[in-house]
Image 1 (cartoon, rainbow, N blue to C red):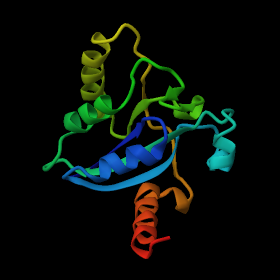
Image 2 (image 1 turned 90 degrees about the vertical axis):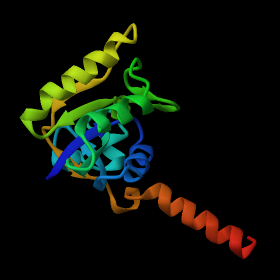
Image 3 (image 1 turned 180 degrees about the vertical axis):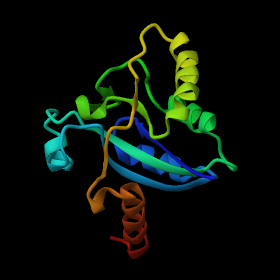
Image 4 (image 1 turned 135 degrees about the vertical axis):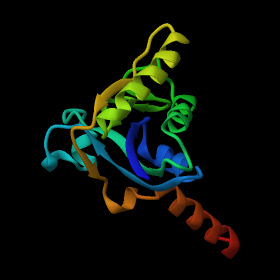
Length: 160
């Protein structure tokens, strides 16, 4: 059955590329989660840090092929769960990490795995909330790292 979950793990480009590689993932959309209004769901406004939006990815997956716990363990392996409003060099409230469920039945699974992860660190800064809203990011943010790799490959082949 097709299911969806939303992850905020810093810049959405890396999260999108990571989840696209997993068997059972059907689609990944970079976007903006849980902010104030649709009018502010754009890169320029989100980067101000005043919208409440998180850079996130909405992951559609086939739950007969990949499980929600598997997707969650991948997420926690990729992020720093102890740092609020930052991942790597990316700083700001739009980079706050979080897991946002769309199906209320997923909350228990999410909270139980998050509790395991939280027990392993002195401070746990990952948001765990229902998804209030999600707006796809601008088209140039979709598959961004794939586009960069293709362009770099073309330049290498042409010798420029």
